[in-house]
Length: 332
Image 1 (spheres, helix red, strand yellow):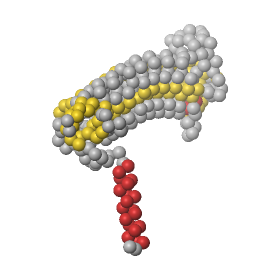
Image 2: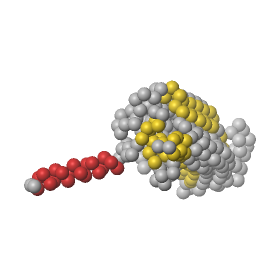
Image 3: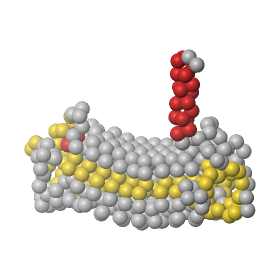
Image 4: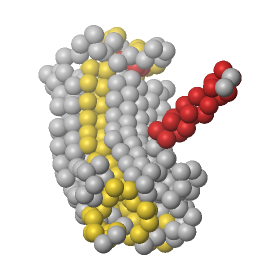
């Protein structure tokens, strides 16, 4: 056997192995009542998986998709404990999904780009939903999240342009990056009281949001979290907030007033581009008057993460002292 033939066969083997490592590949799948399943690692439960390894994962699913809590295979009953990554990706004729309480996790991209999907109710049994699980579901309007989940990972509802309202569980502590990025019709956002962190681009391009109440437990907001929220007019930063990333409010052209409840304003990063602008800052009292007010100007827009040519008012507590390391300023 020549070296070229050996090399070619080795290359074929490498390509085959790499293909098998891709999440789309399905091994040992079997069908029960129109859905495909694979055994979990412990062989005591099953995961819903895909029919095809590429393209639309199922070719004949329409209307309401009901995932059963258990199946019987070769005489043995197995609980359905999860949904594999990519399982129903691009199944455009599904309009709703019923997920049983036996399911504890949903894999990445599981329902990604299901363009006909309109409503999702996620059971309280869910402890983890992987990245971009429902991203690009452009008809999705309502979502009910699990009541006990603590963390939402990246991009779960990225690009869901029809999404209008989300019910957050009271246990939620962290919202991942790009979670609702591009949800232009999202208007009702009621963040839970225990929320501590909002990831980068989490609400980027959510132009339907006009007012937002940040919980008193929030400690950090990452880069561009509310960037291009062009409808946002007012926001209050809680006293618990200690840090913000780059350009958190970049492109928020309608933003008129920011109120900080902290005696020390949250630390804000400067943008590498060094965007220059002028922001009217009002502190030591409410915006609507009083001799205790003092006016100053920020000369570096990105010392406070807003990029806009509009006038933005900042209201701070009476005893606030501004640190020059966080807030560059000059007397007006």
